[in-house]
Image: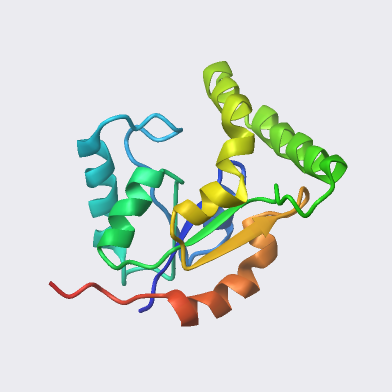
Length: 169
């Protein structure tokens, strides 16, 4: 079985997609929600990801650059999904998309600390240069009203291109 590893921004619909699609698995570390802090935690999370490859069609993971670096160094392809904050959009449209995404965070009742962290870093974490720095095989930008479930057919096609089987030692 080929597995497509999808590193998706918070609020992109990872949990919803897993709940409504039996071919998806959501992998959270014990300390998920943006608070992995130590090199050992990043390595442990990356190892958990590598252990699941070949066992599910889609593996949805958080967007820690440190973890993605480990995956990249191990030759594991992944795609990155984030809100569209492209410089090619007007500032008006970027703000509309940002407001819609923060509405998602609010409705999820995320903690104030997490909301503050997202608010302070949203523009950086969704910038084209930051997303490219994670060295993904592909970047997918979602509009304000889009979720992963809206692009599941595209993800099926990408699985054929970027999906990987169980790693050989």
